[in-house]
Length: 287
Image 1: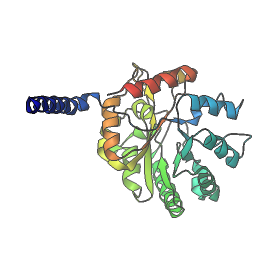
Image 2: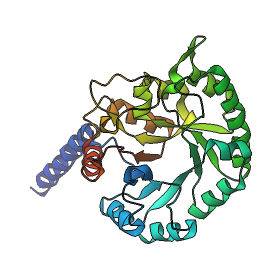
Image 3: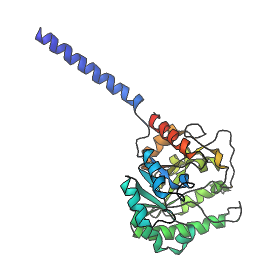
Image 4: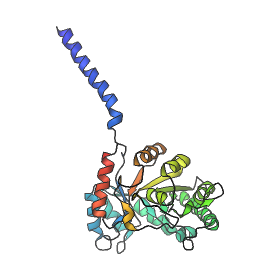
């Protein structure tokens, strides 16, 4: 009788184990990273109250921020405010002109923040006419600045903005920039909205360039919007994640595979206090 009972118990345990194994793939969350935010999302809040804005961010469950600091607060003080709220700063920004000069200020700010990445989100050009000459100049600036930053323990990432999708030879000007920058010195940050707006395909670009992508702006473009090469769109075209055009399931499957570890929600609409929590909830439930 004891043997039969033991056998029955073992059978039940084994059945439960098998069911759990087979259930795991369908129940596993796709998004398994810290929740991060791009500070520009709260651009209307920081000038009024830096501490209060960081309190809002903390209460949303956000533990990482990509930022260049805040006006009226020293970088050292800003870092302490973030530390007190359990918010890390893995990435900071730099202007194109700073990169061109290889300014030590970039390094100093990153070191104060404890950042490992420095991103640049804009290549200067006339109007909406981004040219091969602009791309060639950027390649030179990025290679030189990237080498300088690497020598200081930092990784440089360029953030495409959509205007780089103009055709060039057998591809685009973005292809030209990626192929002609040195992988040892230059990496990239994908902003999903701007890739879509410029006519690019985030999934295909993740496949094509793999670990050249190091960071991501998690940002969705309103359905029905057809973009262009301007690098601009009305703020209300930023929508809650999962309600726009992005194929988030396949984006996260690939981004995880290539090793992206830092994701920053960015919402340029005027409804960030409502949209960001909804986007976080979407990420929590994405399977």
